[in-house]
Image (cartoon, rainbow, N blue to C red):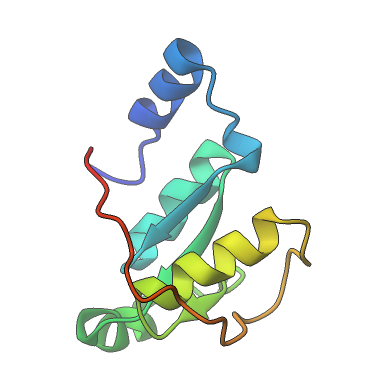
Length: 104
């Protein structure tokens, strides 16, 4: 159960993942808690579910950047991974017409 970062720590240990340079994109506050627990940065991708649950976010936590949807969240991460600024709300970045699917 989230926000335990065990699998992310395993990726770090077994695959050499740099968690400090890694991002978690999620649709729930718990996903952002996972990012923080693992030392990653997080982006909250908007969904109907997210909109309904956002008010449950703890006032003690700094609000993560948020986006309208997954493609916008990916654009936000890519823009910052290419030497862009690291804070603030996602800018409206052009999204390629075809986003490759990812397998886990």
